[in-house]
Length: 203
Image (cartoon, rainbow, N blue to C red):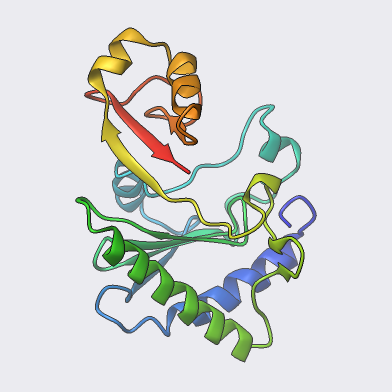
């Protein structure tokens, strides 16, 4: 896990994943890998503006305190599908985070694309004598204990302008919990809504 990995470990992870990315040949998966250290400022701005790129863990936050940001930005990056609907983060909080997303309500299409990406990664990594960390009791292992199990987070960006006007971020988060979901503001947990009262609501 990132709290214990060294530069050599991260380099190996990135190398394995870059080999796997070459196996993405489907129209909605194929794309290009960008290393954080060599990415152009234009590409960085574009990806950050779209909310697709992670940032360096800083300050007293848990990831930074655990050492997950050591040797930043070496051996960290993002794979971007040409479709703009599929991404893989490399060596951020976990060794990789696979993301499938698009505007609209085609949840089946989004999940199908994600599943196809997962299976492609699994097959390639196992062929390279690697694979996903899995325990028969705990399921898939992640850096954050709250993700142990499937590791799957499904979320929707929705506009809640009237609730945003009447409730503070903490009140809206508590309101969401009554329905068994989590609400995150425009800049993550415990932050105000995004433009127009936009919230990220997830399992």
